[in-house]
Image (cartoon, rainbow, N blue to C red; front, side, top):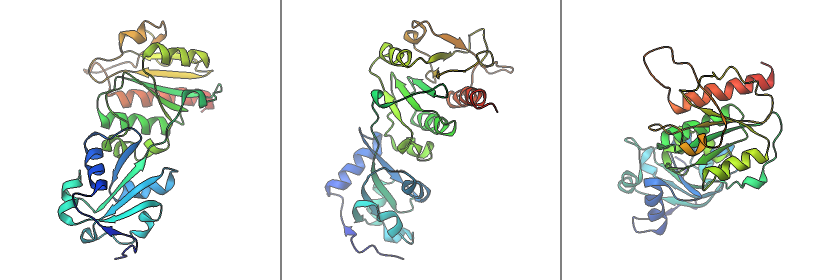
Length: 264
């Protein structure tokens, strides 16, 4: 096992351990807890700053130097402390604190090929992470959050997004009219995902800047989005279920628009 020469042993009272305990619960603005081997394998593919790396020698993970190399601080923790910090039933001894990039609405430039996903009121961190991963897979320009309930910095978001929360631009607006005005200012044709809509998602041409708005898992889209006067599209439900999971719906919509834009 490689022992990183700069790794300092720390205990439960160390300030960095308190940081991790806070991030473990629900994240905090700008920082996220990363845990696990494949999760750390994703870190070098991003430009994210790694504030601190923690490892437990007894967990048996070799070659920790490759994970610690980019970290500003490197710490060694005990098995007992690892069990307290970990969110996994079988922790593998690797944890980090990473900085989540900040994106500003005015920093974007869009074209007719641009694609944006808006997530309104998403409640569960796992679904938010999957929406981020879906936006990345469809090469969307960004994910817009309105009426946010789940934090992008929740540890579960990192896992569900397969680490793409550190590379996918995410923009949050304080209110729905501000988000709608921003989309209009960039000439987006906005489509609300609504199971009750009469027109299906196959009808629009998607030949300009395109945005889809998906709603929360329980109550769907906020009335405020409907009040903006945007068109609504539906995904036909041919069985017993009345709707699809929000991330699955987003994937169908995004890839339909991407296929049209790219001429697949």
